[in-house]
Image (cartoon, rainbow, N blue to C red; front, top):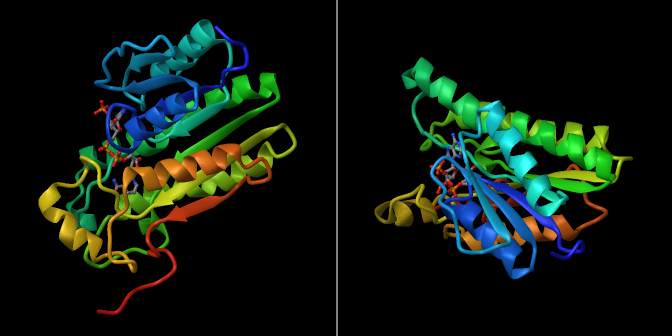
Length: 239
Ligand SMILES: NC(=O)c1ccc[n+]([C@@H]2O[C@H](COP(=O)([O-])OP(=O)(O)OC[C@H]3O[C@@H](n4cnc5c(N)ncnc54)[C@H](OP(=O)(O)O)[C@@H]3O)[C@@H](O)[C@H]2O)c1
């Protein structure tokens, strides 16, 4: 075990964007603690998986204890676990509200709090959170106010924490995707979803991975919400 190898914690790591981020960190010889509710063990001594609901405080406790016990340091937390449910606002049930808040906001709270405690002791670290460009540019065809309520909070907290920790060696950033080809969207919806981007296509997991890696290496960048959304946050392409 090399003390030089960096260590990343990735939430929502079982599929989609999270799985792509885990692979990218491994390709760069980082060790990874990968967590989600259904994640399975993997045959790689430099990856440890931890099962748990991101909204439960004990999941974050277990994840960071595992990271320290196994790898001895934490360099990066990627807050990727999240959910999306498009509905007219009055159609959201109390259960919808509770699960949205728990997954998108409470998960960020517990994971980020544990990470900042450890990173403060180390005097270095980076936290990057996945939000959504719907926060900046809502679409009448995709009513999703609970996504804005919860992910918008993450964009705001990213800036707040970047400033709170600016002199500590810890950076805090976010990536704001457009609509990305992951299991979140069935293949038959892809054509219609592509048209919702000024560039006329959906994003790929690699587009988000590249942004996370950029921010992770960008020592002078903190408090940034980096839009990787085919122009969605900038404006509209009139058909
Ligand atoms: N795909 C897009 O178009 C898009 C656009 C904007 C933003 N995003 C954001 O990007 C992130 C990843 O999206 P994705 O498309 O890769 O989603 P995805 O394919 O649906 O994967 C979601 C991941 O989050 C985990 N997860 C969900 N609820 C969880 C919970 N309560 N506790 C722990 N883990 C949980 C899932 O694993 P388990 O089921 O094993 O728990 C899975 O690994 C999300 O935050 C999403 O909001 C995605």
